[in-house]
Length: 226
Image (cartoon, rainbow, N blue to C red):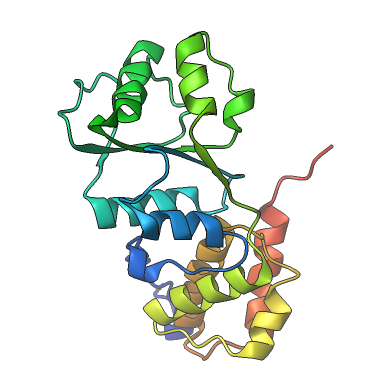
């Protein structure tokens, strides 16, 4: 039996949002960190640690800085970078780096040989590391904290991602979605992805009933804390 046209499920071919600086949405939640990205290379300290919860936009900031600086992403086991380097260290708090390797990179930047932008869910003062010299270097770095995404940031991201998919999100739908959605940038991206698929499957414009259905489905999938 073949599916009717209304029942056919669209293929999710994927729409990977740009992480370039020009596509970075700015609000009070991330303004200081974005300002630091824009100020490079005129940083007061050559090591910057961006701290924030999951979904606050740390990776997008790091990618925006890579876009501006040409920075490389540090991987465990990488050789010592050449002078003049720019390095991103993602998840410095939990990515399994060798502390000796980390110290070599961070200390080289501190000595004027390059720049480091690290991301972390934990403030440098609370990092659990065994190397005192590494901890002291990170605690002396510029620390920029990202707040959880506020309404302005979420709206900007939703509108940007929807436009990338040629999906219309009018203000009334945004007002309905904000208090009901997963309030993270990852949650915003997943909501737009599902709305795009739902509108294609239903072959209709985005409406409040369709939005509510998608939000209810996502809420039902969220594990409840005990």
